[in-house]
Image (cartoon, rainbow, N blue to C red; front, side, top):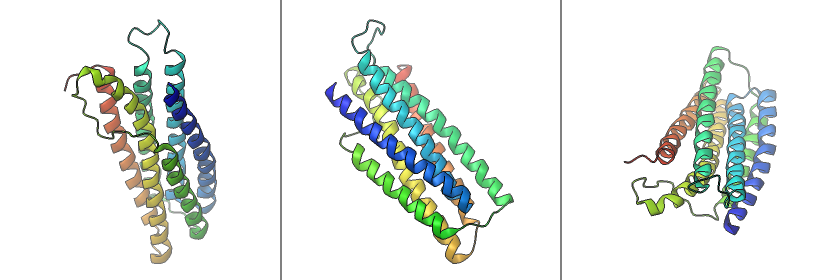
Length: 224
């Protein structure tokens, strides 16, 4: 339980960093008219929301650990949190793709220097978040066919996995945003920006689908 408190504190710290960076990227995304930067900023918003769900799940599972309201304990609160996070993340990926397609139809000039600077700041924050969260080992490819005595570990990993993979996805989208902006600036071809936005949306949807399948198996006690 003490270890879970540590995870709560780490998650809260990452949430604070993420929210600050989110507002910064969205603001400058609108100012500089960068779809890639807006995509990264809005995705960081879903990332902050997902981390909030992770934090709440840890808090509730610890608070009600000794409650008789839950017949089989509170571990599935964490899995339910990861399931919910995956749904919102998938919806965000779809939204990013739609906005990027609209950007193809109605392109807007981009102020590249400012956009690149803010994207770099976002990447630094994401890397810092990974360093904060990496203290706990997480199995990113859990075997859902393991015996029942491993289920408790799976539930915990599902919740932490949702938070950790959100951060990894943010690192990826930040890198993609930087690449898009650099290509647009030096090759003078603006369509790289919405292309990267679409690519980022696809990656987010793919990650969301994978986590959704994993958490559904645990929530429904499905066999392989």
